[in-house]
Amino acid sequence: MNLSDYGNVLENISLKDYNTFKINSLVKDLIIVNDENKLAELIKNLDQYFIIGNGSNIILYNDHYDYPFIKLDFKDIKVFDDNTVYVGASVLPIVLIHELYKYGLGGLEWASGIPGTMGGMVYGNAGAYNEEIKDFIKSIKVLDKETYEISEMGVEEARFSYRDSIFKENKKYIILGVTLLLKEINIESSKELIQDRLNRRLASQPLEYPSAGSVFRNPENDFAGRLIEDNGFKGYHVNDAYVSEKHANFIVNKGNATGYDIINLINDIKAKVKSENNVDLILEQEIIK
Ligand SMILES: Cc1cc2nc3c(=O)[nH]c(=O)nc-3n(C[C@H](O)[C@H](O)[C@H](O)COP(=O)(O)OP(=O)(O)OC[C@H]3O[C@@H](n4cnc5c(N)ncnc54)[C@H](O)[C@@H]3O)c2cc1C
Image (cartoon, rainbow, N blue to C red):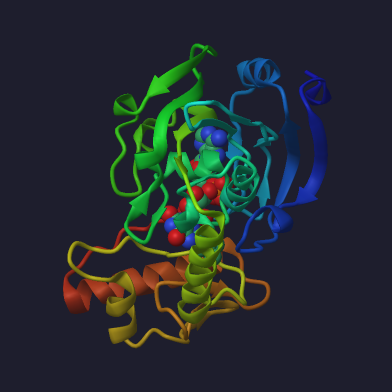
């Protein structure tokens, strides 16, 4: 099989620029695909593969991956008269927000600081400031990994809940794009809201270092960051993987942290929080083996 029949293939490359933790794992083939039918054909011919979005919620555990990583290049944005917008899976929220200003549409200001793709956001029902992507979704265009059929899925079927969905549960689908229902907005107010959200993030999150966002989900009626901080972990590290001094629910890479370092640090935190607080912290980030 010739992988280059399906997309642009980068061979034996570092994934450092493809994950926000900046982990320097190598992959044998990274295939960039911009055609839905070719994607269906490609996965038909592969036993194992990984769909990578913007790599902002993953921990690359292996030094080297022998199976291919597939990066989608679906960047369509189509606006319809009824304030619905079709967005390709590879579009970043900040890019979408700016594009929609041309049409006076918005509502996704809360997502402006999320460095993921629409596909990744739908997969994990991304959210911030009490908003979640699920509340804006009309339908999702999916490719079934078993039948290789492309179809439109309704919101109910996607079974969204806090940072969860059918996509995360059974991994049966590739998200190709999503149709969102947005609202008419005042652009100046929208820009102010985005600036406010950015200021809040800059004040509370260690954006100066590579990370993959919050490490653990917040336990019910509590904050993972509080539990981690109270157990004295701020500044604690395994090699170059550090618990941030600014926000204890962030692990940052201060140099050449590997996935192995990050996971050892996570295990130390989980063990202490379990023994001291009897809380089982649940990882929000995904370990890729
Ligand atoms: C600084 C920072 C701040 C963050 N803030 C937030 C926040 O406020 N709220 C929040 O919810 N998250 C936040 N995150 C986490 C992250 O950005 C989101 O979870 C984001 O939605 C992940 O998207 P991605 O494209 O990077 O996915 P990736 O990390 O590339 O992949 C994550 C998972 O999604 C799957 N996936 C990706 N695309 C597709 C697709 N098209 N079809 C099927 N599966 C797919 C991958 O296979 C993988 O299993 C933050 C991260 C960082 C680094």
